[in-house]
Image (cartoon, rainbow, N blue to C red):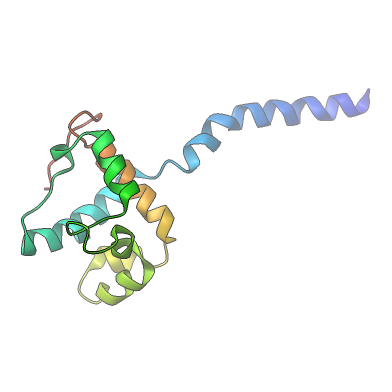
Amino acid sequence: MKSHRMLMPGLLLALLALPFASQAGDGDWKRGRIYYRMVCTACHVQKSGSIAPSKMTKAEWAAYIKADKHAKGKDSLKHYVSTAYRNGIKASNKAAEKFADVPDQELLDDIRAFVEYGAKDGEKPASCS
């Protein structure tokens, strides 16, 4: 009987934590927005013009990220969120410096969360500014 008294609160806590556990790997769209605007947009403005999240739908962004192709397939998208890349630009980019220790996949999840949030069919279509 005593073990049931101990088991019930544990089960209740586990059930209450489930919604939060499912969100843990979803990414932090606010952190993704900072990185996207300060790193991705900064480079694109210089080279080819900015790409607003609202230029594509959530499905298009998901496919783009999954394909891991950047610069028309010339290189990997993951390269631009890698620790090595961030360390290489952190002297001239505050966001790269601020997020230097964030795991690569976590940062990619954050960026994905932002572009899907700000996508053409997202919760709040976003520009680059």
